[in-house]
Length: 389
Image 1 (cartoon, helix red, strand yellow):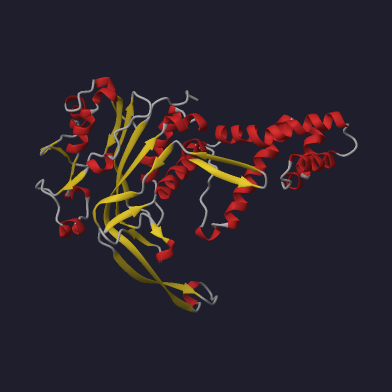
Image 2 (cartoon, one colour):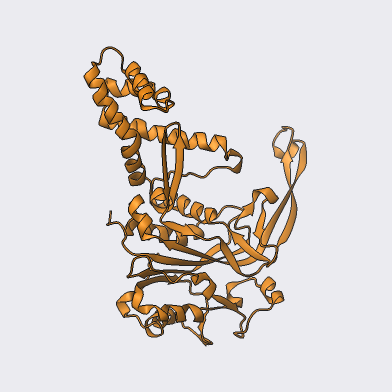
């Protein structure tokens, strides 16, 4: 693994959805989340993190601590499930660090030991678990090791093993063990760059309710389905990678590479029934030279224009059905990067070929985006990296 990151960076990510529901609200019949004042589509940061986690687990073989959970499991049951994973990790450490019959005896009574809030009571339960076959001096030696495992070594093991904890941090607690760490990578809610239209679909599925000689001969009944989808939404996410928090979770440059891969290709691999139709369009990472510095609000520096290069009316915004119908104006973004070029170490980006970018009215060619970062921002060729994702 590479060294812990030393530089702050900002991330911009644009993707679109066609005839899909990017992030339903379970409290509102799973309808797409819409800002009632502006008509803009909203996607939570939790949804983006889920996309990244699932991709890194399923396609990159990474260990993921926060697994997908059904909404119905939130609350007490979800806390129990994650708590069980914490205890499982402690058991593994006990077997590695102590081993043999001693570890086995401790594991058998682990729940009872961990329920005790005071160190004295934990020691009493711990000694009872080991029994008379272990002398007092050895018991004390093992207990001090246990306390180190319960606190320091558990935390080290978790952040070393699970990439999502290094990326996003976590608040994990059960009994008298727990880990609370703010993640170095934080995203704002994603928002569409335009007002969206929402369609309601109602259909029916014929299901067998009585067996017969084959499906056709059995008694059948119609089941009705209702769902809401967006004909089109071009969504922008903005995030920050905090180099100070990275020290606490051990976030490395290798982890960031996997993160970017997960953002881009994780989105392409959202192919469930409700999510199919999502495509990544633009990914940008700006890495800075100075600690504790970033430009901020990069997401507010991207605008949509119609084919003629003019601002979209509300009616035009709702009628968008494909990325080819709009132009992505990054003039303000390019200007801001130029203003702070002396503070930028490098820019990493990837753009889909179907996106038309414009800067101050000029349309960029397929290769023009990299040249724009070099010429207009004032960076050197080696400071602008096109990502291979």
